[in-house]
Amino acid sequence: MRSANSDSIVEKRRIAVLGSTGSIGSQALEVISQQKDFLEVELLCANSNADLLIKQAITFKPNCVVVCDESKYDVVNDALAALDIKVYSGIDSLCSVVAMESVDIVLAAMVGYAGLKPVLAAIKAGKAIALANKETLVVAGELVTQLARENKVNIYPVDSEHSAIFQCLVGEWHNRIEKIFLTASGGPFRGKKTDYLQTVTRAQALNHPNWSMGDKITIDSATMMNKGLEVIEAKWLFELKPEQLEVLIHPQSVIHSLIQFEDGSIKAQMGLPDMRLPIQFALTYPYRMKSSYPRLNFLEHASLTFELPDSKTFRNLALAYEALSRGGNVPCILNAANEVAVDAFLHDRIRFVELPDIVESCIEKIFFVGNPTYQDYVATDLETRRFASTLLSTMA
Ligand code: NAD
Ligand code: MG
Image 1 (cartoon, rainbow, N blue to C red):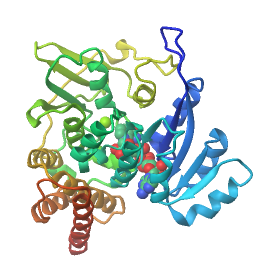
Image 2: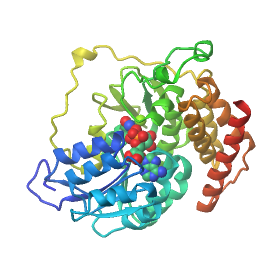
Image 3: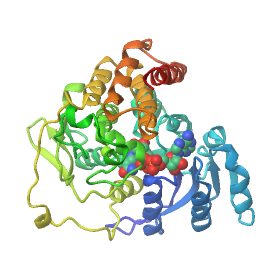
Image 4: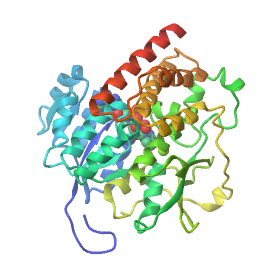
């Protein structure tokens, strides 16, 4: 890579894109094609969208492709047979290929708990991680960050708020953080109360005012669980205590987050809501490569406003803070219960207001483990999904 400000040349970075067919994955491929002198695709992986995965493979010609859904292996393998691309299937194959010598950075952009195993495999193999898959840190933050320290692996945040904090920290490593403010748009139901939320539909919940994202994170944004997950993600990324993590509703999504240092000075990172920028910074750090993405015009955003979150109405945020302060396997329970509940809501099996009920019941009922091992996380995830599914069947 050639530094933006000097003539020093270092080698091209070879990227494994996990979740390449999703919202973050597709935008990452756009970034890579904009920065093709500096970045190239080494590995593409998706769950089951074979058609798009094949198209991406033909365009980017990676060394290998993994389709996690094994029933899609033949169709992907046949379509790519004439090209010099290795095709694999299943999560275990993915865990092996992320460790390949030729991979420099693993962009974890799968959704949900499914990201944990390949991220752990990549860290053990010493790969730098560009992390979009926040659920990995929510479920097993202690294990993931400890393993990263042991293997001298850096985790570069992709989530826009965490990228903002990271960007504000550059050059400040020796200074202590007093607190951080994670900004939140408030989602489509900002300012609404429980009475109104009783009857909101899936389509209304999927209609995010500022960001276009995958379905799961869009529902999490509407319930404020997304911000709760991000608070836990920030604790692990920046080694902070619960009382140092504040949420601030900022409907314009121009300030992506803020740090307050011990002298009282506050730094913010600003820009349009465009994930290509944090994705690019995570892949090209410490360099800021020239881009042609739209620039922020202050006159079009003349008023930036702030409010406190309403965690009485949006109970998921309070539940995430509870999981954060209880620690152990509770964030893992929170995450699994939420994944089951969001999936049920997306299939019209439960109402919007019932989402936190499922999470709360699981946190109450599932066994507590204070210092979980990887096996404890696997067992907690399984048991929570089983219990949450039982709850769903009684609610139907
Ligand atoms: P998405 O639903 O659009 O895409 C998910 C991707 O993951 C797809 O490529 C899918 O094939 C793959 N996938 C799903 N399950 C899988 C499995 N079991 N095995 C292998 N691959 C699997 O989701 P998204 O919006 O791109 O979000 C991805 C992650 O990034 C999430 O953790 C989300 O919280 C985080 N994130 C997203 C945004 C955004 O703007 N979309 C912003 C910040 C963080
Ligand atoms: Mg975010």
